[in-house]
Length: 205
Image 1 (cartoon, rainbow, N blue to C red):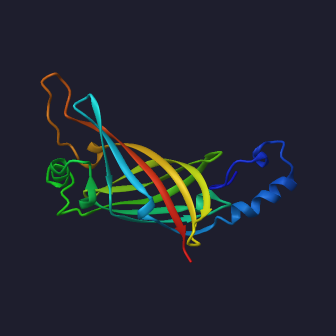
Image 2 (cartoon, one colour):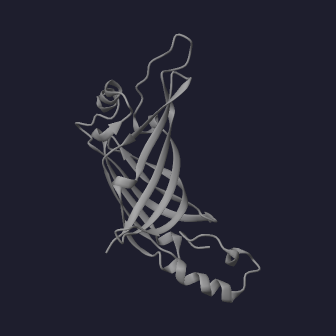
Image 3 (cartoon, rainbow, N blue to C red):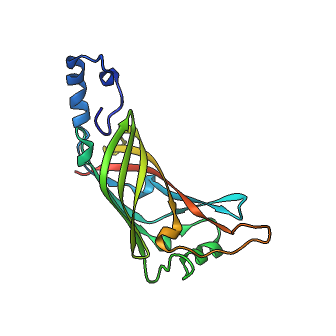
């Protein structure tokens, strides 16, 4: 099974060469360059708060691009640029704190970036993309597990592909170490952060 194509009977060891040949053009048709559609894409995160609950947030402004190779996943790439001042968590006070010198220092570091270095198939509709995530001027490798959700043509004639993705990072790896101790033990904000991606991308003309 090649990247970004749904699993069929052609994926089994017993599949005949004629079936595999029939599937290949469909997969190859996915090859091309795509632009991530911010209006239909969500880039979110989850942090543990006070050891007892989750706080969820997202970024409202970002740009991204994909190159998909329908026959060889190793040739697929992704890039993402996120505007840090666009962070939203449902609390203006908390958003302001996250933008401050305690956390993202958005005046000094206005953008967070991701640049892929490797893509691979995990079988079925599952894939993994590895790359460098830069925050506060520090770059660290992360891996994002992706599920391919298929393709569609929207009412405006745009060819779309969809993915859902997830990753986990330790914010301290990027120097994000602010915290506060709790009287009951533990700390206010977890080091582990979950990243969530719900991506819709449009094929470039």
